[in-house]
Length: 220
Image (cartoon, rainbow, N blue to C red; front, side, top):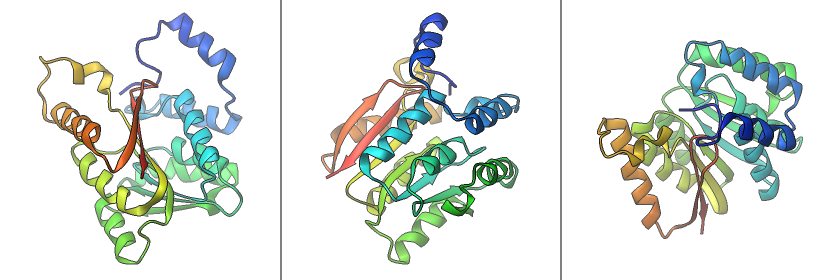
């Protein structure tokens, strides 16, 4: 995991941010607070957050899904990009982390746009499908436990509409996916997931080398 785009020297990365990042102050505050957390490395990079917001705006999205909330940066950046009647359905298991998220959602004035489910994500996703919400989401962002990426993807593929977009984080896994010496379970799962999506004709595909690697899968 990384909080900035892989492979860029610091001076080039700083330049990238200086000419592109338009981060609202509330997001800057959240990012800085999260950086002090013992597992703050799980925070997405600010340039990636801005990219997600742009994707949501390009889609004209109103209903979005998030699997993995942490301290709420990605859900906040998406909620800020949504229209006033937009909605984020967010899945997480941690009351501790999402307490921080809730505080910032409230401060930003978007708490009413975000519906948080504290439960195992698969339970929430299956409940959404069981209650008739298949093909009703415009956008989904997956950034949770890597061992379940394939299952989260399959559920999200059912939940998003045709022409909807699924974005999956950490698919370059700090470069470990390309190192044959690394054979831990999570790395092997991500490798297998990447190979599966490469062959998945249900979607149009692009793996973008932003932050820790972001796969974009557009449902046909």
